[in-house]
Length: 109
Image (cartoon, rainbow, N blue to C red; front, top):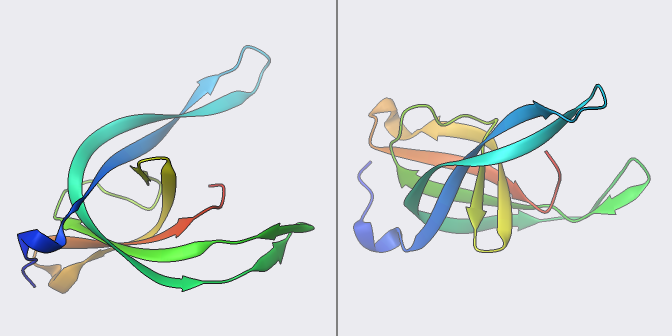
């Protein structure tokens, strides 16, 4: 499925995680930019859930970008001050033209 350029109107930054030693025997996760790409962001659903005695309000989105090798569910997207954690990556039609990223906003990774 070809994506029309007009739909890709949001500029997002793909980021990958790296664990770095914190000096106390533990690790701290830091995020580094991989690429800045054009995307279409479509909200799918909003819900409230109780997790570990805390109320969370994750919002799920479908983010469509042009195909890019190496995008995984261990990455995240930044859109302005908003962060979208990638939960699934779909290569639409297995044709290496577009990726549909199923994301959650507002929850920790």
